[in-house]
Amino acid sequence: MKKILLIIGVAALAWVPLGQAADIIGTITLNGTPPPEVPYTPLMNDPNCGAMYKKAPTTHFYVVGPNHELADVIVSLKGVTGKSTGASQPPVTLDQKGCLYRPQILAIQTGQKLVVKNSDSCIHNVHVVPAVAGNPESNQVQMPGGPDLSFTFPKPEMFMTFKCDVHPWMFAWVSVFDSPYYCISDKEGKFVIKNVPPGKYTVEAAHRKLGTLTKDVEVKDSDVTVNFTFDVK
Amino acid sequence: MSGNAPVTVNRSLHWFAVLTAFFTFLLLGAGGLVTSHEAGMSVPDWPNSYGYNMFLFPPSQWIGGIFYEHTHRLIASGVGLMTTILAVWLWLKDPRQWMHWVGVAAFLLVVAQGVLGGLRVVLADAQLGIFHAIIGQLFFVLTSAIALFTGRWWQNWENIQHPTFDNQQPTVGNRPNAEKLDVGGSMLNVGCSLRRFVLFTTILIFCQLIIGATMRQQHAGLSISDFPLAYGKVWPDTSASAVQRYNEDRMSVIAENPITAFQIILQMVHRIMALAIFVLSAACAWQARRQLGKKDPLAKLALFWLGLILVQIFLGAATIWSNKAADVATAHVLGGALSLVTGALWYIIAFRRSAVLPEIATTTTISGAYGGAPAMAANK
Image (cartoon, rainbow over the protein chains, first blue to last red):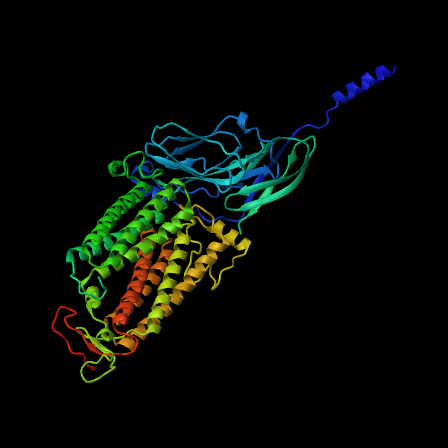
């Protein structure tokens, strides 16, 4: 009888989950009117690059929707390190097209491959300017139609600069995380950090111009919603 | 050979030295354009350019920032070659032994400067860019000084025998211990205090150039975007929230880095030092005119210096008003270089004059110092 009860007990423990991973979801909004974007005048003055546009493209520092939704905000779990799955993840692509980096804001994990392409018909140099020791600075030529360049970074870093000095208006900002728990808000301001294990976390929302906001959350067995509102000072 | 022994002026050597100084000035301008266009790393390799021998790099590929960086390298190579020729020429043809070593110093400095520029690219070290900019300014002073030293004017002064070498009591005419020396015109001794004053101002200009180079190598654009106020105030708010607000409002296309409180304070120091340099150079001009007379070449040079400082202040303001337009910012760099060289040469000339005209006021006759007939000193 005792053996039967023991088996039933073990079976019951195995069947009842100890805690399921859940998503952290939310929306980012901007309160206030940001400064107007500026046209890439130097781009239009360049004979090779300017020929690709009829009208000067503008910067995209503040990508704001009609209802104040804010895109290009990097949302992550602050202080979560040593959980990177970057080595097994597919590469992330950064393209140089129309003498601009596309996208300009992106995020990868430590050890994850970042592939830089040159879709333009002119020379670019890919100059990586990290601010964190351990992430190597590099400066490589990429000819038109030349092979892709690959980068990996061992240390977490926010908004690491990728730039082209041939065309000094070309910038991309790559954030590197030591865990898979991050995402970038879309044009509707929405974000989802998937499969977060149960626990207490500080969620950080970082915008290159607007700085960072944080909120504490507790993840249990269902999705958690957390919204952020940035203020234009 | 004694420094006081007569020397033959080598006009070809002098004009070559002048040309070297002129091309050094152009090189500073080319370097200024590189930084102003944020093009310092547009050619990732060195001494090659995109794998080509530097001199064979096809002009069709000199696009965007490459144009500025590559032409800077080519002009630098030209200046390096000219400096080498100048050093050899000085060694072989200039009878003054100390000039041999000045030539060697110029050669070593231009080599060091070239290597430093290359390392700044290869090591991708922006800090080296600051040293590269500062050594460039010093090298311009050196080539300008060589142009001065090889000129007729300077060598005539060297040719002058110190009055006390000939006479224990140097006297000319009937007025012993008079205050003027006639060398084709009346010139007064330059007082030690005035020389020190000019030297101090020149050192301050050099410090100002170091601050300017540091600001430019931050690659952060304008840390303060208005002038004469700073973010609408006499002294800007540098709190963390204020700096955050400034960065939110900055919408520069090519400013790579966000500004920091340190950079704002640095620009304020730059502004204050500009004011101090203006006041000091005005005082120098006034003192030179008072002590030497308005017709004295050094008094005129001091006035020119003051004018240069004024132009330089305007260019600094224009750099801000134009949101750091590359040509305006580069003109500001060149104005700084000319201001430094003018102060340095003023001091060197005054020092030389004082060596001939000792602090104890004397009067003497200089024979043929300017290749003319002996002139009689006279207190006019």
